[in-house]
Length: 201
Image 1 (cartoon, rainbow, N blue to C red):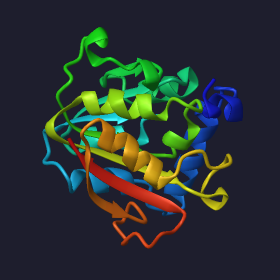
Image 2 (image 1 turned 120 degrees about the vertical axis):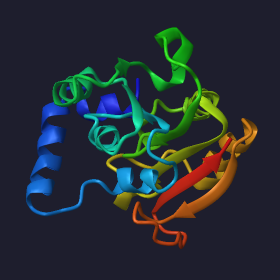
Image 3 (image 1 turned 180 degrees about the vertical axis):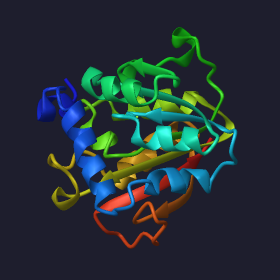
Image 4 (image 1 turned 90 degrees about the vertical axis):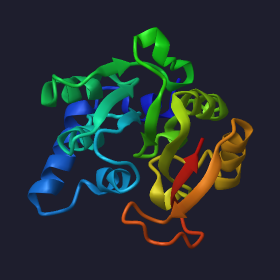
């Protein structure tokens, strides 16, 4: 079972969406991840949001002209995404079993993004497999972007993956580290408790 399911019971889609809607109404910027991704690849590029949740990131990217697909394991989150953007392709799938061809989509994404602590919330022991599956969905030269907490201050669960471990999983499948930041606003990474990593296939 994923740590996300243990944490939420997979019934938190509406609550999660409401929290971000409230942040947006209060004037908070809730599109940092989408803006970060848009700076990496041009409009029209194919983007896979792996662990898309309620679709906040990928819906914004679609509005900016990207060709987007969202996948998530949590049906309650996907139900919100589907309601907000019924025209986008959404798939309920375990990232450890993700195979684009089985879903009828081409494995030639320009960018794969896994924001929102996707990796620390995977089922323990599946992290390397998920990296392999996501890397395989990229075209040669494509980018994988992840952002996740590394300590208890930045996570809703105890930490389960370190940056060296993540980098090793990436290297094992031919991904090369391009850049690393401390925030989605591209602040320089200083060894702190949150990291946004960009790897290239």
